[in-house]
Length: 332
Image (cartoon, rainbow, N blue to C red; front, side, top):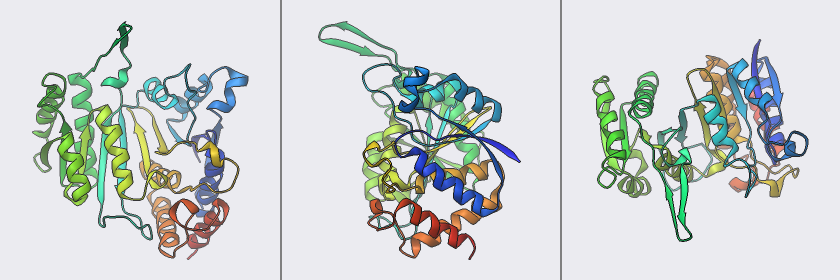
């Protein structure tokens, strides 16, 4: 039986975790869940939103499913998510973006993947205040990290039968930093002649995505652009409530939804578990449990196509009712 860390988060985290665990159990797949609490709820007892025991659990098990975790505002961690990625060296942020049946959007046939470098760029957090009116933030781009994320994107394209990887930068302005990222992309692309490569400026990309997102397949981006563009692409398929994500390193992988902890609806049985469930499906594929991953995905899609949705998707089902509908469709 596979042992997997389950970080149940705070806010709506525990509710959607319960939903996803219930669905996976109903699929017939047996998982030994190593449940770890994190976030604002543990600060009073442990003095930090990210206790060392959580990191040790993920390191030991090598894989985790993570619900949203609230980052304290104004002090302490810049971000629990950023700290988790840094401590575990989860260098690749993977966000598949695909239309879901029954979820109305402006575009059909959206099927693209955002691959975001996770460890450097402005998110390295190197800042200083020069004087009362001036602050500096230093953008870090290295060849090593750039080539590593570009190789990840091309490997993903090969493994998943994708045809193109498009590099996104602002190299016309930031000629040294973004220029190095682009140069690294060009070097790595030459190793994958079977995959088409393309280059685009980030502002042009954003314009084209809202005109016709079907023009794109796999996007690879530095950290900041990847953060912004991945939320944009989530909007193309229905919003953050249906947007899955993964953070992958050499030795560990953490799968999580893109959305936040939504403390305003905590405990109200309103939360949409779809994004966490899709993240769990991606996780099951990652550990080569494709039969169960496909079974769960099929049940979710059938439920949505039948018109059963939570309130955020203009439906009327509670979290528990939506969960029960998916489990019913597991048996169909």
